[in-house]
Image (cartoon, rainbow, N blue to C red; front, side, top):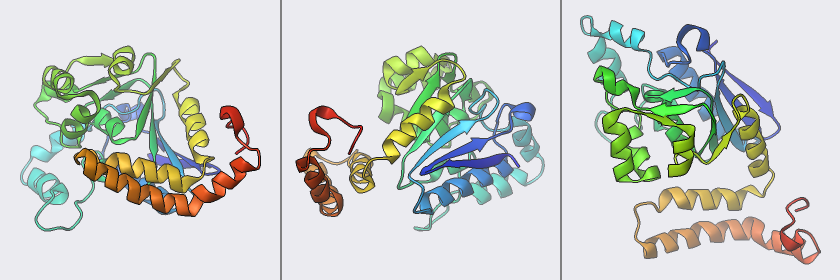
Length: 271
């Protein structure tokens, strides 16, 4: 089994473990298993935050090119990639991406714990997550540039939204290595920690998020995602709609707790 889930209360850690044979490169079995794991996480009412971690010292070395090479015999590429993973016609949801969960739009946050390489499709998986916690010696890069393989798991869509168009094109067109230090500087990762500590740091952040009232946090997260391409006015309308529902469910009760003396002077220890 290349994928397993370890649970600590409301936090799920989804672990991809294919390091010894391929530095956690993605094959169809892992892609299916990761997609299933994240769908289960999203549907479980007790699960609140997920951490995505590659075991063994590599987040993900991209798509398994040894598997990819086998597709250029006969009609395998047409059947398994074009027909098997293509978007097709109509409004039906697309199947999983070549890298697995890259096409999912989850209702709950996922944090990437990035050790070692997160390159090509592995970088795209990290971009799919809400936030990225990187080891000091970890790195990104569109390394598939060398082999004539494009970004087809959201990299060319998500990267410019995170770092801006110019920086994204620099990274995408050159295929160069992006160190953790540069990633933190340009906003490609949110936190940088010593090597070997990303899982613990991401899980600590996940538990911090999970302990808050969830309706308001999820409403704010949803607004961030939904309003990206809206005008300010339309975005404000969506923020109001999302926030009002959460306020009814949790905010009034929270205001009562504050009135009783909790959480004064920015104290988050007792809420």
